[in-house]
Image 1 (cartoon, helix red, strand yellow):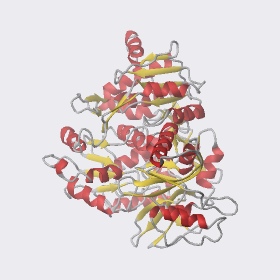
Image 2 (cartoon, one colour):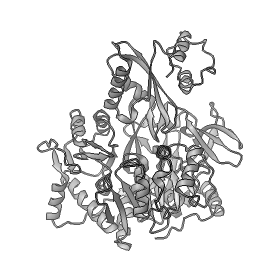
Image 3 (cartoon, one colour):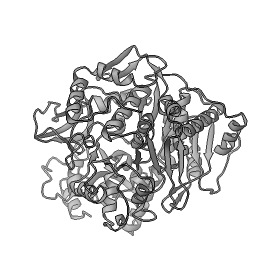
Image 4 (cartoon, helix red, strand yellow):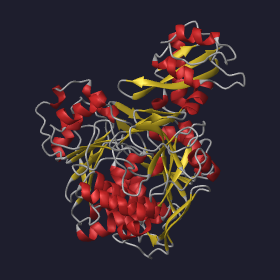
Length: 637
């Protein structure tokens, strides 16, 4: 498969970018022509950021799975679509060709249909990182159902919140999951969640770990038994359901600055074209290469760059069930060597964690197959960038530092491997179709280079979110109301003298922990559920491995004769309510919080204390009780 829109030089980039800004509709229409459509579109773009309303390829009809599977199964049936590497290196890996993957997706589409699933239904998927997770996602898309994948580390409370918000009628899960040396009881977590989820009628359970599970009559069914029924029907094909370009493809919940997670909605055509275009160009993908994205499909990176981007391009996508440090810190390098990986796409957190083990795990590993390295999830610090470049890429592989969000669907700002210049810790230049600008607090554009401000985007791209599920006003408030006529990213940004962009971190109340976004309000709500907690305030602080750590200031009214024990109890509460990923790194007990006279917590002050900037706290005289700041400073952990 060739990609006529693949950018090959810096001159190509400038030409494509210019056209994408001056004639965006013509630019994207030409790219859209390269996909399979049931019906061509009537209008390329209809938009208004005030409402907000964005529609791409309106009137067009297609199915994303035909573009990811059928067309490649016809032209390269035996080419590997997914290579799966299990958690345990002693277990055999699996490879699914495009023909096999299509057959398995059609089988599971029948299973869903047999359970009553219809176009427009919402289906929750809570599974380990096994090929069946990708199969379930694609089967939903094939029948026109909307998938809502929940990361396997979330608690039952988080799952029930997400199921109830979307009113899912089917859940797809597994008995358990392996993650390093842990065995996670997914089905029992789902059972706990479903106590408060009346909309769920069917649960389909894959066998993975073999741990005992409870199976409820008329609700729960084994994946394997349901597949057998389809095989007994003679494995009929399953024609892909025709979807409007703007029909919902999936909901993916992301932390907000208020406690309730918000369901980001992506639609069929624009998201497909954006993930495909960015995949082919950022990584400079060549047919036959093996692309290894180390993310979990429970996050947007896995949706876009394990499933939809690579498969729409006919690529080979490597899926990994385990973690980078188990059974030892050489696991990534073993996988690269074993499967002759050409593109490695991972998070700065993983790189920093592996740096801590030194270079010994890299010794005697043949990494010569690598052509491109990539980072995602958070800005990469200069030290980690150089380690990645020297130790992993041997200074032979361009590093693409990709900046994007759940809401953007795919990469927004990044260098293109070997085509546009890289600069350590800078995402560099915007993708064609992306029009970034920096503004000050009042929304006034900051012109020129060598400046910094809040990062906004002034024009829609095909992968932009369309709404937040069931609450369009929340979408408007969160992304489009801060600055008039602009999409506000929530990130601060610096633009250097050459026009390169460097993301400097969140400017709203959302933390970026190990590349995962966690709302401070969500963590505070969880901490406040502990019986002895009166009030709490959560801020981020620099963390050597995670990028940002979680620092909690807690007013505690209960009996805590043992502070260490109370801290453990609070952490356990957070893990139960949200999941282990949101546990605070530091909990400081305080008698009060710095508040204005109107009762607003001054997180700016707490953030500076957490960061150790004790002498530059700004004016504290306007606080209700300025003395509380001195006490907090004295007790800093």
